[in-house]
Length: 375
Image 1 (cartoon, rainbow, N blue to C red):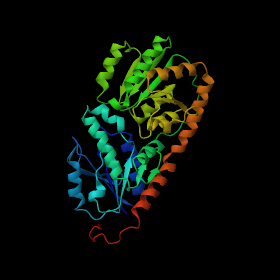
Image 2 (cartoon, helix red, strand yellow; image 1 turned 45 degrees about the horizontal axis):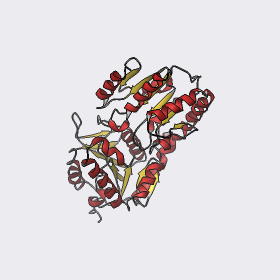
Image 3 (tube, rainbow, N blue to C red; image 1 turned 90 degrees about the vertical axis):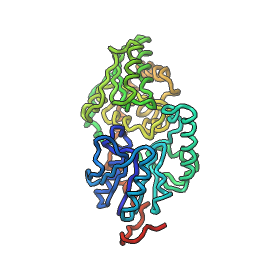
Image 4 (cartoon, helix red, strand yellow; image 1 turned 120 degrees about the horizontal axis):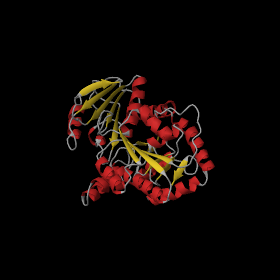
């Protein structure tokens, strides 16, 4: 079979994140089953127009506002695909309108309030309205998504078929847990792209509140992004430069080491599709404390593998931390449960589910590739 992925980014894009890592794993699984796979994406500085990596053929052309037209022109010169996967990131590729072949949609989260982070009114409002109208127009297109939260949001907009397949995790759980007493000084970590929608500034404010309450703590921030200068300024304003460490982008091995050493992962994003770094932290024996938002309420099982706080505020996190410090045995239970659950998201479990579903949606292979596309 022939599969085409349409996604604004590919794994080498400087703006790539967890969605691209998961997408690459799904497509590589299809390649391993003997299928032909193409990935059409934006062009960016230093990227080849075309290359094959791990059996996936990458095509790069255009950018915001133009890549769809480049994709259509390229697509019409290709042999017929068995399935087109239209990945949504606020805007889709509108493939059902021009693809003339079976199509599914892949989405991590319905952006909703995230539009307001990147755009001022009225553009933010226009973006939200566009997203809702687009998803309603896609209501008869089968969707794949990693969380029940996103599935519920899609269902509320009229989408009729949603397949939930959790994100797999590259991080192999530790062979065993060594002791990590939950006591001061607290070692906190945030792993994220440094962007406004991730609200890493809330994690910094958690640290300030802890110190003001006489609770010694350190915060390590792992990741890169355009918000770093503002986050550094905030640390200076709050007199936290001796308590916060920015690592920048690091290797997987170093990221795992940072997660392993921390007592807790803080995740204060506006919304996530799943929260892959929660499972990565769990695999390293580190539970998470997260905001009550879509995706994070799926990757963290409240009161079992970590904590989902009652409000999206630093104060809510601090209250839970103070409570947990008074009950370190509860922390140990969260840690053990999180580590055990992380094994459920091994790729060997997740990839067959994704590949099976995509093959079913593609249907039987088209034997004569010279036939004109069907309408």
